[in-house]
Length: 409
Image (cartoon, rainbow, N blue to C red; front, side):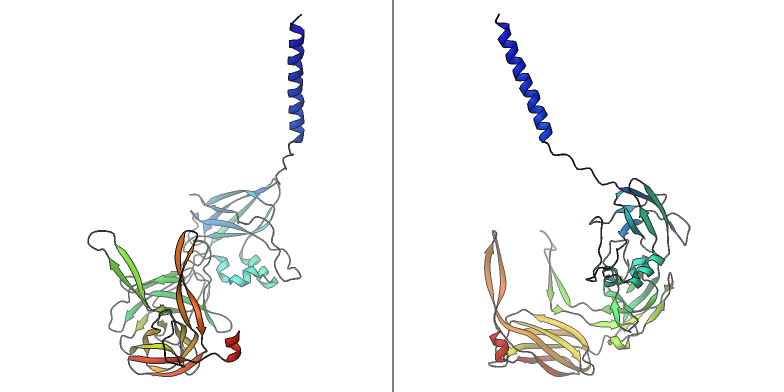
């Protein structure tokens, strides 16, 4: 019969397919079982109103393990912190959380973030003292595999500092940069830590004055502070106002602007400070800027050897009595020209460093053309005493040759 061989052939092919399938299935790598995780639910409320904290940001930060022998913190868990936003009832839910112990941090604009009490270094290189302080102010939740944990947070209203910046003729100082400086236990003034996500950091430690010269800062923890307002050093030019696209060009000197501290002083050491408590509202922190008595200092950086202009330099303006740095400016111009605007009457020192002859080099890489400065010759540092009683121009800041040893390097 002719059907016998055909049936045997089909049977052989079917058997081969089954065996291949079994073999292929046996060769597939076994899928690694995912590690068991837990979840965290909770609620956030506002302590001053007892109402839900709606759309607050809640994040989990792994509690650091014990300090290793190298002094670095050994941290476990995910690279990104689990984060959620509360709903209209102030509730939140976080799933797939790696088991462990976590600080629970809540943030909402206008309310105090407990992490703002610590510096970046304190949180990165956590000491036992910092850890204990964190545990007193920030709730800790323990997450177990395949289990849920719950936590409740209450947010305390943050402090508010406000004032007005005016010129001495009574007109408002508009669009000035205003910052809050914190006085530490050693008496030093420094800026607050603000590098957190919006809603989790100090939301108002920097500000700009409005059309009436007013500013408002929210979120600083209890402490002692001063306020500093800075005049702009850049100029903006506009093109294409009528027809076509508008173009904006920012020009002017590179460097820091004149700063006026609370107490209407240019000196940091003479700045007036104010103590602020948690949730306290402090107003009337006003600053008056003198319109007269501020002068421009213009000059050129040259090589002492032959008086030619240098195309690169860094210049600092220092107070003569204590050598505190007042301002700084960078030179990146073939003419070597520099300018300090709004310099009060007084005795100063001009300090020059990083002076060099450079040339612009055109380069082409990755289908792009760009220019860079190539250093041809470096020069030594120098200082020049300066008495400012009015506008000054033609100041010659002459850079000496480098000592032979440094030049060889």
